[in-house]
Length: 450
Ligand SMILES: Cc1cc2nc3c(=O)[nH]c(=O)nc-3n(C[C@H](O)[C@H](O)[C@H](O)COP(=O)(O)OP(=O)(O)OC[C@H]3O[C@@H](n4cnc5c(N)ncnc54)[C@H](O)[C@@H]3O)c2cc1C
Ligand SMILES: NC(=O)c1ccc[n+]([C@@H]2O[C@H](COP(=O)([O-])OP(=O)(O)OC[C@H]3O[C@@H](n4cnc5c(N)ncnc54)[C@H](O)[C@@H]3O)[C@@H](O)[C@H]2O)c1
Image (cartoon, rainbow, N blue to C red; front, side, top):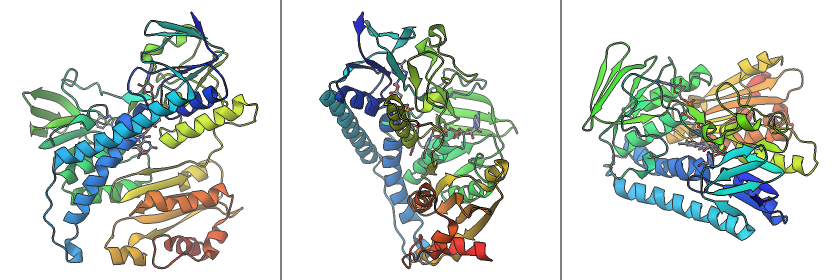
């Protein structure tokens, strides 16, 4: 058996920098990875999806430019789109490999499992270390629907390997992945149907968010089947027939994409036998300091049911590093921002009004429709709104929801105010540049004076 100072399982967004930092400080680090180095984000998540969306949105903007007096005929070279996507993915992956190699991390390209709380085995290697960090992420959930098992499904794991654009794509799930990839494939020329089992898309967000996105997706020609589930799936020789609960049958030459949520990658770990407790859904149970139920074993990122975003997993690493270095940090005092990269985008930070009220804040919200923003009128962006939630006792900004052009960028203005513990009055007094989208943020705050 080999001895090491640190074992990292999974080369996700937290595991890689942690392994590198630990190795750079002179410790012997062994990292187990069963797939491609760099985890979901680089290989089958953020990077390829956003590279695909760059092409798709270029096509979509050109097609929707008629109201500006521009009539474009769009031709999509799907093979070139995907070649570029895979090229970016390969270069990012190579960067990770180089970082790990430069730091002297020993990599075991194999699936890891626990042979005791401080002993990990995989690929014929057995290693023991006083510190083990689990960063194994999640994989796609395949819904248990009659006929679905064994069908040639697309998931986020294989969709970026497509060589040809599906003529038609049927998507199960109207969450982040379903909407981003659905709009992406539609804008590249596929006929897209999204089957979603709630009355609104992105049902975890405020109702208006899903309503705006539904309108935007319909303008892209996407067929939405809301409050709907598949009762039977049949797939043969490229022809798919999905029977929906209302009896409607979606039939044709189609690809099927499962975008119905995530399942933690813990099945192979043998964690419970090593004294590492999982929760009911199989996520690793952790405390405020990322500690699992086994001494010396920590978990970070998606597998620990942290909000499933790359920047959260990365920030988990930074916090865990600080905790291991003796600092008093916890995992839950962050200002959480995130975004959905549809067009229009959704930029979110902090609490919604309902969440703020539920937490006991005396909270209030104000909303500015996109149609009242000069920049939006000039650019012809009529869909969306900006919403701000504040604490009436302290004037602190508690959260914001922005739906509109590049909202993922613009929301950082509010994130910075929140991180700095600033108030809506400071925002209201700021003189933002005309004519920008950000100019609307002090105007939004000004509504609180009425
Ligand atoms: C299509 C898609 C788009 C996304 N877009 C965004 C986005 O735009 N912005 C954003 O912030 N987030 C996005 N996400 C979420 C983001 O990818 C994850 O939150 C992020 O990758 C954090 O993951 P992680 O560090 O927890 O682990 P991961 O990145 O999932 O890495 C886990 C690694 O562990 C390995 N592994 C698993 N089990 C074992 C084992 N037993 N032994 C050895 N290795 C193992 C896996 O192979 C994998 O490489 C997206 C996700 C998807 C699927
Ligand atoms: N922009 C980003 O940051 C980004 C992009 C993609 C993914 N992600 C991360 O990945 C996670 C997973 O994304 P996701 O879209 O797979 O999951 P999700 O949980 O966001 O959405 C899945 C949706 O599918 C619906 N659903 C489940 N089973 C269904 C069925 N049988 N038929 C119809 N609908 C069904 C659910 O109601 C749910 O709303 C997200 O939570 C997010 O954190 C982030």
